[in-house]
Length: 94
Image (cartoon, rainbow, N blue to C red; front, side, top):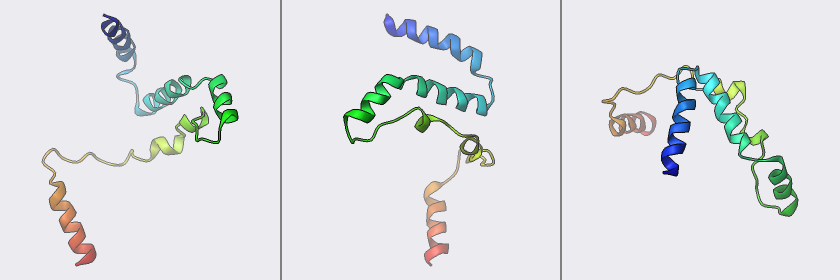
């Protein structure tokens, strides 16, 4: 029951953002991720141990990072990965 309620609520939000640009979606992902790390937890984790911890700054997607894959076209459905890999290796290493 609880899952159905969450899915319905999430679907409502999805309907509002599904046609947004990639930049907007990436920014929203960054904001949502950052909202899961509270400043209080962040400070406690930093003070309590030497272990690695995630901060809000770590979760930010910079404009540069969000543009990295924009010029890459998706591979076709019938792309033969193993064949392409073998061809590449033969060209590179003979």
